[in-house]
Image (cartoon, rainbow, N blue to C red; front, top):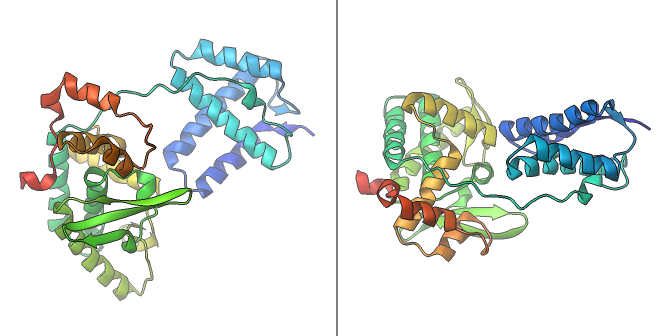
Length: 314
């Protein structure tokens, strides 16, 4: 039976959406798979296939090497196609994954590009003003966004980690709060939050829970998705967080993303002489993860990489 690549790719992309992948992630997978489609057409093959042979795998490898200078670009497109063929195998449409025969070069890590500290501080001030100058649901949304800022710059959380948090994930300790991060395939860990988180979180929690009670909503998640009129659901998808940053960039005239703000947090910890093992634990990475690129950037421009906790500036 011939497989219609376009139809199966659409099914695969919809599955990624259901699994909670962000809008940009799904868009990138679509672009990576389209690269394979262009290759098939260039080779005068239609987009209905019965098999993908080892010789075709080799041709595709050579095609990517000629088309892209970056080994990371090649790696991403191979990985996307490999996952797509895994999906076809799960549907019993392929017996083996032909892409497993295709070797790619090791991933090359890009140099970190953190948000400069003046922009980090300005962002916090903008978010605080938004809370102070709003009311009702708009104020709760603004307070939620301030909590998001603290979770990334204060605790180095990834967008995917924040999407799964509950109120029970915020733990009280003697010095303030910690955030508990839980993963299905590894042990949970907690990260301390800065003192500036305390009052902002208490304000958010009080007003958010009051609103839920008034609206008779039962939501356990720390964050939520809303339109201007009502809360739609508990939890905030990675795409929802991306939309928040898109809106923020327009106001502060910055290139800030969740990733660049998280990298700023890593430089903050390095400036505070936090033990490297501890930093890796807080980032949720393996002990073999290297901070060398961050240390090199710190040596090159130490005055431009001075990051502090927000409360040091208030």
